Image 1 (cartoon, protein in one colour):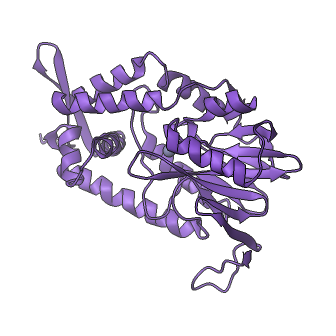
Image 2 (tube, rainbow, N blue to C red; image 1 turned 90 degrees about the vertical axis):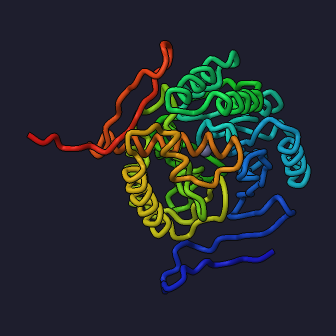
Length: 355
Ligand SMILES: [Zn+2]
């Protein structure tokens, strides 16, 4: 077992008390006192989601769950066996947000363990809306993508993929609400629920007094969290996200235990990179939006999309930037009828009318 003090490069300041980090097996790492990170496979380009098991006297908390599919269930079975966890020892399941890779197995584990599943109150409303088993929300997404210029041939593949994802979040859990700024006991520690909308409307960070936090997908190393505009959800998620980055920047979080990629020990530095990334992408969108659909802008700023998953995420990411720019007055949005029962939405740079 190794004990490591993490020192930030170019800084004489040690940013956190000693953090214990110990590879238990290939998919399980102890990342702090009584906190184990579990790599759970996902059938998406990200490959894995990082969930956590937090130990206390005779019980455990599970943070995030993975998708309902066999490799994910096998990863959890391995973790339970390795850490000698009986299902009834899971005292609670806490979700950072209701995206499928974090939420998908919550119902499965609730049935197995009897544990309550906690999610921010606002995100519960979204989960109920998004994961309706009849697929009504998925049909709404198909109409939305068509309106933003996605060709119908590709739209069918995207819809098919959305329906596959819907199957990977069943059964649905009974959800218990968390409220912004409330405190929750996880392991032997108390965490504050910090609402960080943007990546998901009801995304939370769980932050404890010594600085350690479970940060879900709010801030990730190497990759930028997807900031998506979906129909029926918050109208300007990029603004929400940038505001939430400012909020988290002030909290002195370290280490940040994320849902994907490496643990973060210098959150402000990564937040600065993310701000710069979105500023540059906004400029790219302004340059690309010349009386064209979001799909056309998307192909311009993401020229090498390979899979349906990449395309649907890129399109909703593009839309969050375009609508941010509309709200800022830098772009205008216009509806245009292209067939008797089909309208498309076009974006173009805002021009000051000349007299
Ligand atoms: Zn997510």
